[in-house]
Image (cartoon, rainbow, N blue to C red; front, top):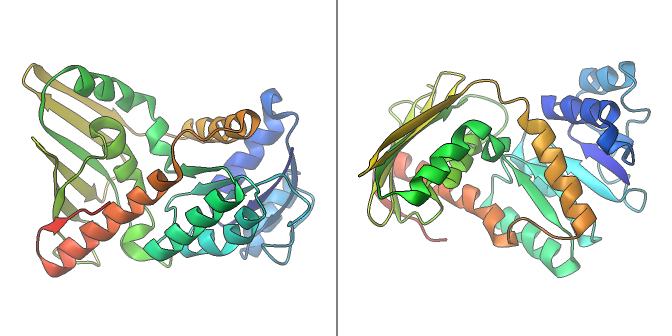
Length: 285
């Protein structure tokens, strides 16, 4: 299988390229080339012998590859880079944030569905082993509350709040599900890494905090008891992301429906609307 990696400025590009080179299970995968605007990142991939070609245009690989891995830091590039490929029916891994713009997310997913392009991606935190026991605990007991905390980077060149925030959302979805009704968010200063949100489900609330701390934490409060978990080193999740992508291509089956990939973007927009307008926002999926 021939693939192209689009967006070399992200450390994920280097991690994926190293895994493909080093792991025997990916021996049938060939990185035809990469595209990225960061010359230093491109050169590092070349210097390590991980790739042999750097394209001058993200769409240069059309007709030359069997799949794409889109890992650009700015979510707006994900739509820009991936759209022509999914229109051609090429399977795509699209990193977090899936997109920044809701309309672009919908256009990308509609094009993929219409042309039979398989899609996967989002945040790797949905694969974090540390939180899976919490998911099972929530499913077996009566949830009455909960908590999730994850890092945020509010001031950056990659759409501010949207750059890093999908990581927390994927943990929230994994542990507590997606049947969210409302959000009420507070952000005292958008130049600080501090956003707190009350997420309303049917019968319980979950407090989520985007914080200035590079650790991930969650807790499930049930009538039957409480379970908590913490994750700090989540680099192992890169391999889980690649496995999902190549399994999807091999089996020609997506792990979830197209519409599910828009949900993190929808929720992030609701959170931002809430803290900017200082009001409770109803989540309309």
